[in-house]
Length: 249
Image 1 (tube, one colour):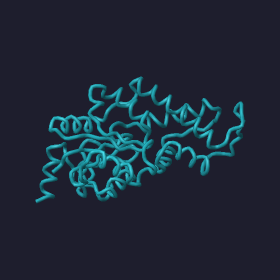
Image 2: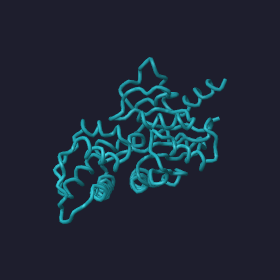
Image 3: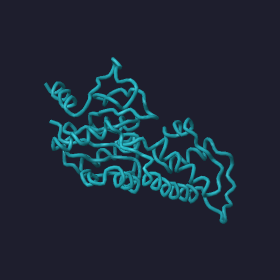
Image 4: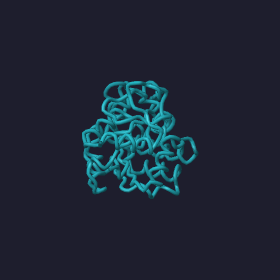
């Protein structure tokens, strides 16, 4: 019996990547004196690397021209990455506070239905706790405390597709995997949830519109392919529970 939903954050609760994190990264690059620019296409490629700091390092190693490390002081690459990421986090908070990012309507309705039905809701994400807090305070100030536990990249050793963040969330929920479903947009997130033994409700996003193998169903209204014959599409919690009962029968 379904007792809880564990939500991913970036791309799942809101379309944060293209108009939030990407824009904030570019602002941070300018602030530290770099002429880097991550356009929408490049950022989509970089999203194959989970984690903001890891993404910067990957860009430096595979895309960036040689770096002249004189920005008032000599900094190691590790220090430069930390400075960029910290500055980016501040810019991201400003974008969220300015109303640039909205909760995705189908996911918002799923969340409301889950709470009305008495399901527990949690978060398992590879973003930082500060980013999660900023987003929840702006998008759902009255419901932010409903999420428990909230497990972030700050608390696990490995990021998705490693299942560590989901295993930690399950442990804190005190539930078995067959009592919980993950809500995810990306292939890495789906793989992490499946590796933790969870079923997955897929919520395709701007950067991850494609179907992902292994999901239980896809949430309607999250992408352009709601009528695809190769994936079960559900309109919300009631249909999702019907699917669950059919699977259990």
